Length: 206
Image (spheres, rainbow, N blue to C red):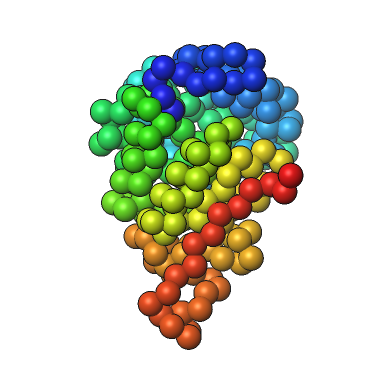
């Protein structure tokens, strides 16, 4: 997101303000441990725990991870998400996959630069799905253009019911066959003409 912040219905928010708001939202969702363990599920392996610990030293922490005990499954390892603030020059970090409950808020010079980084990420590494949150029709149109150009399914301002795997809800499309991480699709027209690919975007109906 732009390092100078964004304009909202409540006024201008700085980069740090937005990171704090995101952190508070996650904290609120997971404030009740009994609910949180059902939302989060268990950590699959020690590799995730090692990545979590390594990610804590990558930048300023907006939200630290914590351990939660599950009343029914006391041996389960459950960790809340970690949110770390990074700069645009930390490409070697944020353009790698950090599998696990790890998220980065990245300070860029502008929204255009953020979209350019997203384009580079999909071209270089691939993506099953991409999301954009904006009140600007122009920004949304630019995001759609990027998604169509690099071949990734795009979700726009999804704030209500969202499937765990968003791209699987595109009429059973999962992946597009048009970028390195989505080099096949569950349902497409490849059996008719393999040179064509389907890329969709979706938003809530107003």
